[in-house]
Length: 430
Image 1 (cartoon, rainbow, N blue to C red):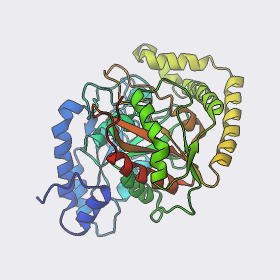
Image 2 (cartoon, helix red, strand yellow; image 1 turned 60 degrees about the vertical axis):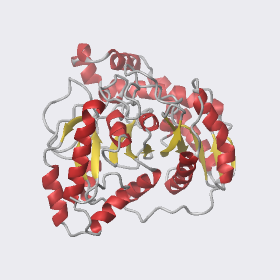
Image 3 (cartoon, one colour; image 1 turned 30 degrees about the horizontal axis):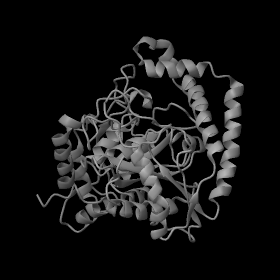
Image 4 (cartoon, one colour; image 1 turned 90 degrees about the vertical axis):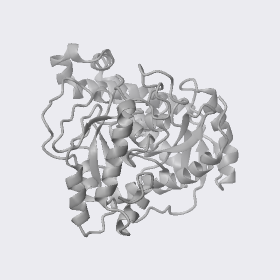
C-alpha cells in the first residue's frame, strides 16, 4: 500500500487516484482503518457497510472521470442507504433495510464516492443525545443532530459526511468539532429518502475538513463548473448574535477581531443592524418547527408515545397546541423577512457571525443551543461554517457565513479567506 492519503484534501485524494499513486481500494481501506481505530472512543457510527471493498474495486475498474473517485463518505442515519436500516436515532423506527439510496446518496455514489456507513444522529434530529463524543475533547458534546458526521470528519477518519439541519443540526456540531460545514439553501436539492421533522425547515448539508473541500464537493454535487463569484463583494455584515443567548467570552473576543481581520483580507465590513427581525425569526422558527413536527411525527407520538424521549414528546405535544393562525402568521413574517434580507444582501453581500454560542460545552447529557442558527434556517438561506479558530484550551470556535440562494460562490470566497486567517490567529482567550 502507498503512503497514507486519508489526511489529504478531497481533491488531493481524487488526484492521487487519477495519477495512479493510489487506488480507490487502498484509499477506502485506509479510511476504514482510521474509522475502526477511533470508533471505540468516538462512537460516531451506527453501522459500517460490509461492501466498501467491492464498491471500491468497481470504481477502480470504472474509467470515467469521476470527481469524487474513491472518496469515503459518512451518511447521517436520517438518510436512506440501500441495504441498511434508517433508524433516525430511535427505537420505534423499522429495522428493515432501505430498498434504495436517497437521491443525495445516489448522487454521491454516481460521482465515485463510497459510503462507509451510517453516522449517529439524535432522535429524529431533535435534542436527545446519541453516544457520540467530541473528537477534540471526549468529555465535551459533539453537538446535535449531525453529531456522528461532524465527529467523524472532525476526527479525520472520513473527508466527507452528509448531515441535515432543521434548527442548528449541522452548524453547531461543525463548530464544536472543528469541521467545515455547509447547509444547502432550503428547497435547492431533493430531500426524499430523508426522515423529516419540519417540511419548511429541513435541509441537506455537507461536512468536510475545510471550506475548500466544501466548495469542491458542492460543485461536483450540483454539477457546475468550479464556482466563481460574479462581481466584487460589496460588503460583509458582522453579526453579533442579536442577544439571542449568552455568548461565551471566547466567542465575543473572536467577533471583536472580525472588523480588523476582514479589513486585512480586503473586505469592507459593517455591523448588521437587524436585531428585531432576527429575534422575531428565532421565535417564529420555534412555532413553525413545532407545528410541522407534530404533524410529521404524529404516528410515532400516537403509537409509541412512551418509547419516545421526553424531549421529542414535549416538542410534539407543544406543536399540537400551536394554532393554524399562529403558524400562518409566522410564515407570513418569514416571507416578508426573506424579501428584506434579499434587499440587504443585494450588491452582493454576506453575513458573518457566530455558528454557536461558544466552544462545545463540557458533558454529554445535552447537545448545546441551536439558537444562533434558527433565524437563518427559517429563511432557508445557504450557510457555510468556517473552522480554524480555537480557544486557549484547544476547543474549536466556528463562524457561519450566511448569504443568498444562488450566490454560494461568495460564501466560499469569504469562507476560504477567513479560514486561512483564523488558522493563523493566536488562540482566543475566553
